Image 1 (cartoon, rainbow, N blue to C red):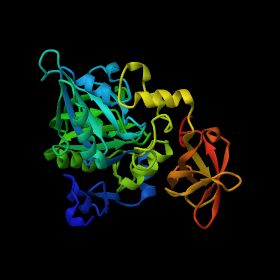
Image 2: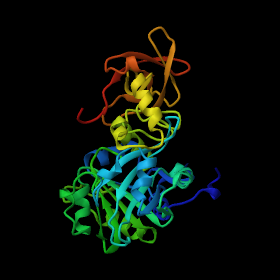
Image 3: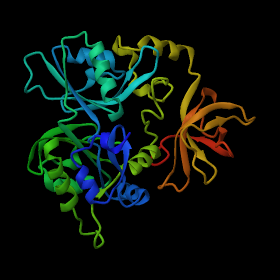
Image 4: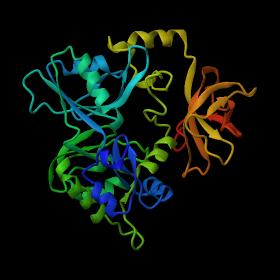
Length: 381
């Protein structure tokens, strides 16, 4: 896609001013790095980093049967959500694939009529149009849909010092917020900001949903005004981080990336997402397939792989058994900045899912030794 046809986020000018390397991603011109992937990765693991993820999509679902629609199209059980709570979920297909993975937020009912509920769905940027069509196609309920993607900017501030860095901008007690809870509040003098204790890095932190026209103001408040007494001269306490480090951070945690590790050919069960697949909640799209697949037994499973070589196993490389026969493929692979060796994820026969199983990875010119390991790669197991 030519640069002239790419969309931009409200923070595009800030990225250029910081000298970011820009790349096309999901139809947007996005920063892949500012000063380097390793430096940005380590900033998030050890301190705090800020990501512009305003390309993500946000939909409001509201009405007397808003919950019924969400229950029907998602795999998780949204009926368990209290106001101010969020959950990870997926849109399954009738054939057992995944339309997208997403977050479901249960909003307050202050602007709803009696008996109505309101939710926000947060979807992947590359799937906004597809997900919107999917929701409309399956909306046989008394629920209205509103696409607020263009009106909403999203910043992720991640890392062990994220709460400390953001606290000066809000009266919320950030360090006391439970994981996967959120509050709509005033942040850095801006009203109607959702502060959510969520993220895609495994390093802790928050995501801020902001009126798009206020994104620059909040970015500047966080990036320019956040310094810490322990910083070395010239260091930012909150480091701008691009999509490159976002990918290496999520891979270290074994988090699936749509289009790589999951798609419309992979089921939630095969992808290790059984924990967000609630068969007992009642009818939902794809339930019959998933119940049958669970009863019959899985043929393959997404696993973590430690590569016993310096070379990175790339997306699409074939996975071979000890005899050299193809048995699967790599879905994601990278050098792990935190661990110092290459890691990957991929699908293997179900019988090889056990940590310690040995496989080979065919790069096209060389075969790499690899071992199945428990996820996440980094942190507690």
